[in-house]
Length: 159
Ligand SMILES: CC(C)(COP(=O)(O)OP(=O)(O)OC[C@H]1O[C@@H](n2cnc3c(N)ncnc32)[C@H](O)[C@@H]1OP(=O)(O)O)[C@@H](O)C(=O)NCCC(=O)NCCS
Image 1 (cartoon, rainbow, N blue to C red):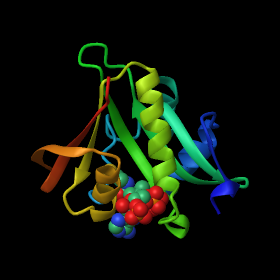
Image 2: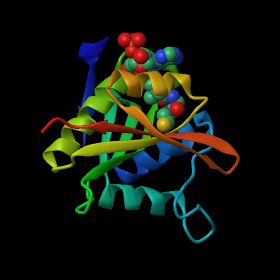
Image 3: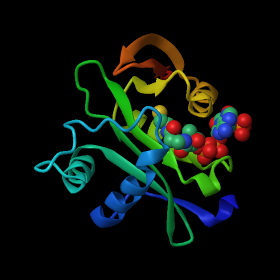
């Protein structure tokens, strides 16, 4: 299975938008776009922002997109990268793809000079929390957002 999967960092905006649109209902709490999607700020605008400012990694199985990660590594004050999006297609979850994407995200953040990486995750999202724990993220704080309890998890990079 793993040998058929490749991680790519060049993604067409239409393919990206289609993947994100299909994945949206998988998130709990629901995806929180910033700024929020509206008539004037569309999914394509959000994807354009990601492709312009974030590092986007996708997992391809043969020709099909089966996972996506987006992260920011542009914090020149605190040097903290931020994982803003991680999703693996439900049909192929549990096969190591999330881990492969996270490995790429971390490696990219380190290359960009980040010293730590943060992610916000619902306290109820056991699968994601276990994945982040496996990659040495630890809970640094817990806060409430729109009625949901959220862990801020941080991974320190060795110098
Ligand atoms: C979280 C998510 C990205 C994990 O992707 P995945 O490809 O299934 O993960 P992997 O197969 O690489 O698993 C890696 C590790 O994650 C943990 N994990 C993954 N799925 C799990 C599950 N259902 N239950 C418990 N632990 C799980 C395990 O520690 C696993 O390592 P192990 O197999 O050695 O025990 C995937 O479940 C997903 O897309 N969920 C919906 C979107 C989401 O919640 N994203 C995170 C938002 S912060």
